[in-house]
Length: 389
Image 1 (cartoon, rainbow, N blue to C red):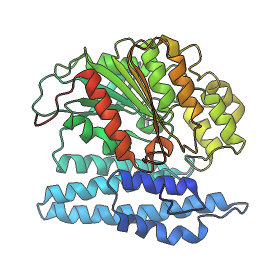
Image 2 (tube, rainbow, N blue to C red):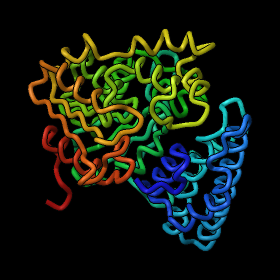
Image 3 (cartoon, rainbow, N blue to C red):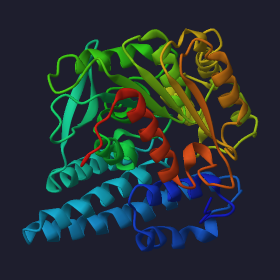
């Protein structure tokens, strides 16, 4: 993986997230160059110093790119404005990624990021509808990516992971699904995005519940073939998607984009200094995501998040795709998930090797390779209609 900060995996991962989703390298360098000297600080309060510096530098970049977008919009050039707005929205969300959730500036950056991103999508006239998925007394924020020219395409429900949002998912994979004739419902489910930040909904083991709510919502739409539905999720979604498919039988295929067989073990390893963290302040972050008042309470929740006794209930096709050099989640999680899914009629374990690329966590070193593989695999199972064919 290209490591802009050789001594800071977490920051380098965020840089690759920007590059994989349309960020411009000169703009990214503008935000990151001032951070080089403090990237490896290990002092007592170094973490807070780093988080503040990252946030301020990326906010400055996002504001500049948004300003350029406004100038284009005022000049009646909405397509140019939209491209800049989408990039600015991404930069705001990457700024928001680093500070503590207790920092009020984080929520402000999140709201600004999703607002600017939405403005960009609308300026670009992309075939996207902002929708809400009824979930108990709440409504989960979601993006519905359409397939122009196809009356009733198959559709994939896409869940997030531990620390991403529907906008980041959209920027990485929606267009490739659309080109293959597959609609996409990207949901900020409990524990992530707007569900966590705006509604206060935390995550837990039973992800088939929000997944089932997403299917219920899709069944109200006349522009989806609800006999051809799948679910994809990345990172912590390597638990979410297989779990959902095991108990929600309306899914006809499932993809674990980066496997997690035993999330309790993952969290324990990370707290013990084994494996790289995706975000700073890891213990505080998982407490926030799972609603634990302390790490002991959080551990009680995440130890229930295992595919043991669950994966064998998956009865639809299953793809488990994992990087050989994943420094966050060891490869054995993928192997165990595949081995346990004994009742899947069409299961596949795809290991992305160092020799080919996409070998880091969820293919962070080259996400195009993983996205191509996933979207082709799903299209083969759900019968996508490739645009232009």
